[in-house]
Amino acid sequence: MQLTTLGQAALAEEGQSMGHEGMMLVRAALVARIEALIQQCAEMRLAALSEELDAIRTTARRHGLQPVERLASLLASVIVYNGHRQIAHNYLSLMLDAATCIDDRPDVASAYLAAASLRGCHPRI
Image 1 (tube, one colour):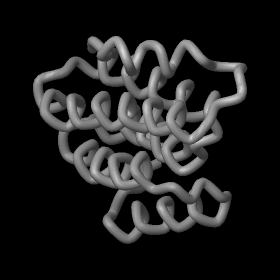
Image 2: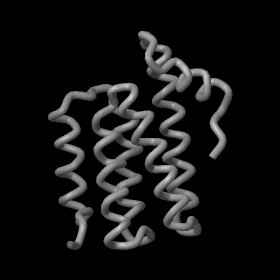
Image 3: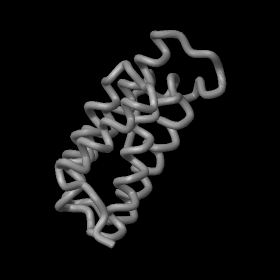
Protein backbone atom coordinates (compact mmCIF):
# COMPACT_ATOMS: atom_id res chain seq x y z
CA MET A 1 0.00 0.00 0.00
CA GLN A 2 1.20 3.46 -0.79
CA LEU A 3 1.58 6.04 1.93
CA THR A 4 1.37 9.74 1.31
CA THR A 5 4.60 11.72 1.30
CA LEU A 6 3.67 13.12 4.71
CA GLY A 7 3.01 9.64 6.04
CA GLN A 8 6.35 8.39 4.73
CA ALA A 9 8.15 11.36 6.28
CA ALA A 10 6.49 10.76 9.63
CA LEU A 11 7.36 7.08 9.59
CA ALA A 12 10.95 7.91 8.62
CA GLU A 13 11.31 9.86 11.87
CA GLU A 14 11.65 6.64 13.84
CA GLY A 15 14.20 6.85 16.59
CA GLN A 16 13.94 10.63 16.73
CA SER A 17 11.99 12.47 19.36
CA MET A 18 8.62 13.29 17.89
CA GLY A 19 6.46 16.19 18.74
CA HIS A 20 2.69 16.27 18.65
CA GLU A 21 2.61 17.01 14.92
CA GLY A 22 4.92 14.08 14.15
CA MET A 23 2.72 11.69 16.08
CA MET A 24 -0.36 13.04 14.34
CA LEU A 25 1.29 12.22 11.01
CA VAL A 26 2.16 8.71 12.19
CA ARG A 27 -1.41 8.18 13.38
CA ALA A 28 -2.75 9.51 10.06
CA ALA A 29 -0.52 7.11 8.13
CA LEU A 30 -1.69 4.20 10.28
CA VAL A 31 -5.33 5.21 9.86
CA ALA A 32 -4.86 5.32 6.07
CA ARG A 33 -3.31 1.84 6.07
CA ILE A 34 -6.04 0.39 8.29
CA GLU A 35 -8.82 1.99 6.23
CA ALA A 36 -7.27 0.55 3.06
CA LEU A 37 -7.18 -2.89 4.67
CA ILE A 38 -10.83 -2.60 5.66
CA GLN A 39 -11.68 -1.93 2.01
CA GLN A 40 -9.38 -4.59 0.54
CA CYS A 41 -9.17 -7.45 3.04
CA ALA A 42 -11.96 -9.50 1.48
CA GLU A 43 -9.96 -9.81 -1.74
CA MET A 44 -6.48 -10.01 -0.22
CA ARG A 45 -4.44 -13.17 -0.01
CA LEU A 46 -3.65 -14.25 3.53
CA ALA A 47 0.08 -13.63 2.98
CA ALA A 48 -0.53 -10.07 1.78
CA LEU A 49 -2.79 -9.33 4.74
CA SER A 50 -0.17 -10.74 7.10
CA GLU A 51 2.51 -8.51 5.57
CA GLU A 52 0.35 -5.41 5.98
CA LEU A 53 -0.46 -6.31 9.59
CA ASP A 54 3.23 -6.80 10.31
CA ALA A 55 4.01 -3.37 8.85
CA ILE A 56 1.26 -1.78 10.98
CA ARG A 57 2.43 -3.64 14.09
CA THR A 58 6.05 -2.62 13.53
CA THR A 59 5.15 1.05 13.02
CA ALA A 60 2.89 1.04 16.06
CA ARG A 61 5.59 -0.55 18.23
CA ARG A 62 8.23 1.87 16.98
CA HIS A 63 6.07 4.81 18.01
CA GLY A 64 4.70 3.46 21.28
CA LEU A 65 1.15 2.92 20.06
CA GLN A 66 0.56 -0.18 22.16
CA PRO A 67 -3.19 -0.60 21.52
CA VAL A 68 -2.65 -0.71 17.74
CA GLU A 69 0.42 -2.93 18.08
CA ARG A 70 -1.34 -5.48 20.27
CA LEU A 71 -4.47 -5.61 18.11
CA ALA A 72 -2.41 -6.05 14.93
CA SER A 73 -0.39 -8.81 16.58
CA LEU A 74 -3.49 -10.60 17.82
CA LEU A 75 -5.23 -10.30 14.44
CA ALA A 76 -2.18 -11.78 12.72
CA SER A 77 -2.38 -14.77 15.08
CA VAL A 78 -6.14 -15.15 14.70
CA ILE A 79 -6.16 -15.19 10.91
CA VAL A 80 -3.71 -18.09 10.92
CA TYR A 81 -6.30 -20.18 12.79
CA ASN A 82 -9.58 -18.83 11.47
CA GLY A 83 -8.90 -17.45 8.03
CA HIS A 84 -9.22 -13.73 7.57
CA ARG A 85 -12.43 -12.77 5.89
CA GLN A 86 -14.86 -13.33 8.73
CA ILE A 87 -12.94 -11.80 11.59
CA ALA A 88 -10.61 -9.21 10.07
CA HIS A 89 -13.23 -6.45 9.88
CA ASN A 90 -13.91 -6.61 13.62
CA TYR A 91 -10.23 -6.24 14.44
CA LEU A 92 -9.59 -3.61 11.80
CA SER A 93 -12.47 -1.54 13.14
CA LEU A 94 -10.96 -1.68 16.63
CA MET A 95 -7.49 -0.91 15.23
CA LEU A 96 -8.90 2.15 13.48
CA ASP A 97 -10.37 3.35 16.78
CA ALA A 98 -7.10 2.62 18.59
CA ALA A 99 -5.05 4.49 15.97
CA THR A 100 -7.07 7.64 16.58
CA CYS A 101 -7.03 7.30 20.38
CA ILE A 102 -4.57 9.67 22.04
CA ASP A 103 -4.20 7.51 25.16
CA ASP A 104 -1.59 4.77 24.62
CA ARG A 105 -1.28 3.42 28.16
CA PRO A 106 -1.10 -0.36 28.66
CA ASP A 107 -4.53 -0.43 30.32
CA VAL A 108 -6.01 1.19 27.22
CA ALA A 109 -4.47 -1.57 25.10
CA SER A 110 -6.03 -4.10 27.47
CA ALA A 111 -9.41 -2.41 27.06
CA TYR A 112 -9.18 -2.73 23.27
CA LEU A 113 -8.26 -6.40 23.59
CA ALA A 114 -11.22 -6.91 25.92
CA ALA A 115 -13.46 -5.23 23.35
CA ALA A 116 -12.08 -7.61 20.73
CA SER A 117 -12.92 -10.53 22.97
CA LEU A 118 -16.47 -9.27 23.48
CA ARG A 119 -16.92 -8.98 19.72
CA GLY A 120 -15.91 -12.61 19.36
CA CYS A 121 -12.40 -11.83 18.12
CA HIS A 122 -10.44 -14.70 19.55
CA PRO A 123 -8.48 -17.55 18.06
CA ARG A 124 -10.07 -20.99 17.81
CA ILE A 125 -7.29 -23.28 18.94
